Amino acid sequence: MPDIVDELNSLLRSEKNSRSKLKDIPDSFFKNADFELKKLKEDLKNAVEKNEIEYMTQLKFRIKALENGIKELKWVRGKKIAFQAIEDAISGTKSEMGSFIPEERILYEEFRRGFDFYLTGENVPLPLGQKIENEIKTEKKQDKEELKKLAVRILYPIEVADIDMDYVLNKEDIVTLSYELAHTLSKKGMCEIIDESIKGK
Image (tube, rainbow, N blue to C red):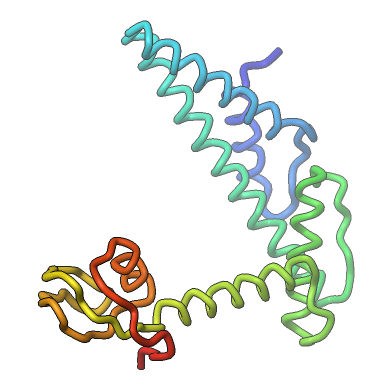
């Protein structure tokens, strides 16, 4: 059985020498490489515990070589897949995918459907479209919570850092603090929340 790093380097050279079309690789190659990485990291953990310095160095070098090689091979192949998907979306054709491993077929379809939507504005691809929509909703919710401020009455002298500025506060001061800080101080008995309806501007 060939060494996984040697096999990876051979595949990478072959892929780089092929301008646009993907070269054949075993369907299980990346899974095997991931399995080898996990094994190497477990070996490294054991070597650290045993203080095997020379072996640790060898393992670290091999892990780095494998991680960098996998990343580069996926980057080279991923670029080809993306360009092919865009070209197919524009021309309305579908290329031969005999050299695509199963995960790359999914990647191609996602690129293709995404660019189809980009071109026409119709038929937003799912689950990709739903994922993006959910991310936008989450971001908006987080932004809203960050902007929300609460009026509080300070019960003990305190110095605190909030989102917008640092505060030196005295007992009975009335100030507006960020939602998170106000509730944190309230739970600690440092302040009393007066009004939960104030919004930051």
